[in-house]
Length: 321
Image 1: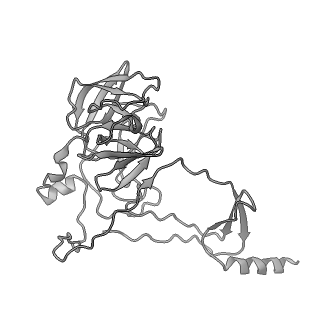
Image 2: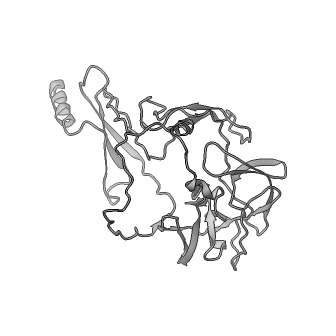
Image 3: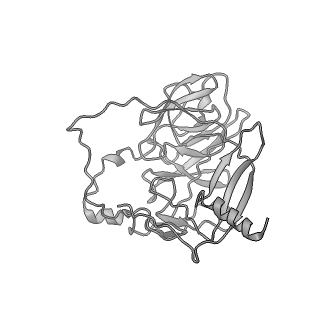
């Protein structure tokens, strides 16, 4: 086939899509996943959106050596912008008082031989970056910050264990155990979704989940939204509710204080749903089960090259207000 024929074939194939398209063949045919990649000099940007679990408030400057420290870390404000493209993603975020970041240790793992890791609560502190209070704890020659529970105070002795005994343990507020070691109706916070990932759920002020029941090899935990999730028994959790319970009832007081907190004015069109016109009763979603992460298949890339626009094209991101 001549070069002109190859070029015509590539141009015809290029009309199928302008974006990267992935498709997987059945496992019975191959163990690879195939991906069509166009090389047309077009720079596509992964457009983020509010609520995608990314931080658009500030960028934290962690130590270069990666060692944990209790010293406040310097931050750079983002003001609701994407740190890569600089485009506004969250229009109601920006400004606010200057804040330093406290590095919170979300990993409450302990020994697995039936012994305990004991730590002393040294102080309960205010953290400007979260609604809950934090606790400075020390054990041996190590210091770290953790999320403080409702009744935690200076001088308390807290325990951490990753061992699951035959009989349920007697829970004490501030202690950390696997959910499989705690009895039913225990209130927990700083919950892991998968063993060893660190606390992911129930970290806001006043929140707490309830251990409901055990089904097969899963522990069912009810969240404050009444939704139930199924977790591995090895997932760690802290006993008790998160501190600063009255945070949700606190009144802002003035528009200027909202600016101090880093919140910009909204559009003014949003109105709170008061329920005056009734509500549609929807059933709760089914139990969400967290298992081991799925392993990704290796990707075989096939690239089609042909002529494209003379300059890069970056799609715009709508400003959300």
